Length: 141
Image 1 (cartoon, rainbow, N blue to C red):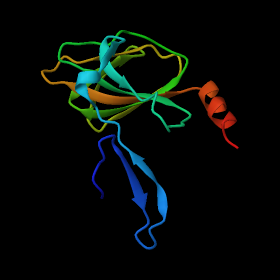
Image 2 (image 1 turned 180 degrees about the horizontal axis):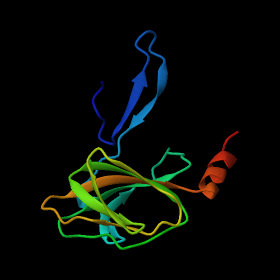
Image 3 (image 1 turned 180 degrees about the vertical axis):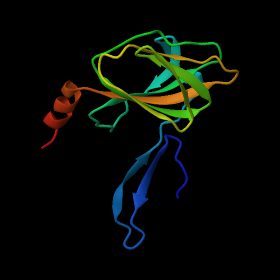
């Protein structure tokens, strides 16, 4: 693979004829640039120049002893465990959630993430609804 440029963008080329196939863009975690919301630290996927997607997302960090605010929303959501362990509290249940796990939440489910461990717990959240899909499709030729 090529070297990453200072802005995190690479051009991918076809090795047979040098034709430009597209770009590869990196969004680094950048712990120093996290914002706080919903009782956790996060970095939103958007805005990201050139990204056109029918969903939203965030890289999330829950430090030891932290808990996100209990909340529900009209969007559907998938969370992918990246590192560490926490627990998902929702629908009257408390389930372990860790690196490699994937959680699916339907719209309207009140939920909370809890980290009672001694290490950071990181996960990626992706959410979507019909309006986001319609907006995305409306931008298609």
